[in-house]
Length: 185
Image (cartoon, rainbow, N blue to C red; front, side, top):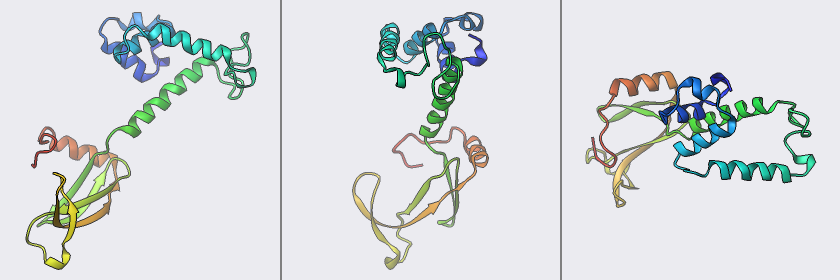
């Protein structure tokens, strides 16, 4: 199988195993790629079993629901796509899903304790909580704190402007200045 036709996440996983050259990867069957993909993700020695189980499930499906029209045809009954096209499309969809599952990157600008704006690389709601004693009593509300207790604070909710490029630039500029989780900067 040509490297360009192997779904990105599969190719990346097989390459990270550092056992095969690209030339060796390029001649692997989908089943061999699946086995190596499973191994990379810690599903050791289960690739063949999972592959066989999927084959059995596909064979046991009623003809109306079977992905391929018949054993002589290499086109999907509904979409008309080949198995290879479906394989590639599945890889693209999985990559998009992984991107959607990735945590959003959010930047909030403050000036003299006042939020000036927020950006993010994907749609996200942001709540900014200010816990200092400078705010007037009537502006404060009771909010849950990071440690689980409650305290008075001034809070505001924001819809971050979606600007993936600008968010990436900000995160690149900040770099490794990120404190460990749970630590205050």
